[in-house]
Length: 237
Image 1 (cartoon, rainbow, N blue to C red):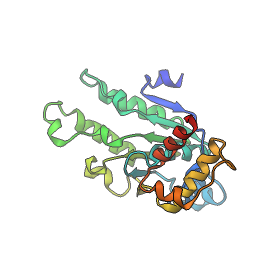
Image 2 (cartoon, rainbow, N blue to C red; image 1 turned 90 degrees about the vertical axis):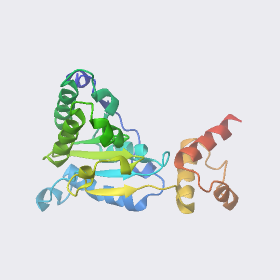
Image 3 (cartoon, helix red, strand yellow; image 1 turned 120 degrees about the vertical axis):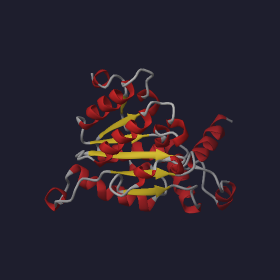
């Protein structure tokens, strides 16, 4: 019913992980734990008078856990996880794209509390040169997105991920659209160790394999996705 109401423009996902399943990123996870209390009105959050958190923009190389983090946030907070897929929103007919955005944002607001996951956020916006022949569609889309990010959307926490933050319009980066911007880089040594421990538990390898200094050196410059793929390849041998 939700999918029909939003004309299949959004996906209501089932989060299967939580922040404890995220290896490393201690500063970001601590930041999210604190904001989660405000989203759920826990403790003194309701009486504090603080505005609800608006969201976080996460950038970094592919495979470093940006999308996994968005799913883990919703699972840790125990709220709905909504995925906004940019390619679904653009349509060829005049005015249809704008109506798609309005319908999607209206449905999203009715599902609060929720985490809105916008993957590859930069794909919502093209370069300025692409705007010459679109009849002003991209400028109107930008206005709708800015209005949504700036509006009073109580209980909707936006987790936007991007591989190319330079491709975002300057208006998006203005203070007030997001609460913070975090860069996720390739995991360092201690983070790789944490990720490997989580993956060993996930694939039933606890007690069968051990994390050695040789293993940590061999996986230098591996992303989280590459570490998981290496373990999957090992299990297939």
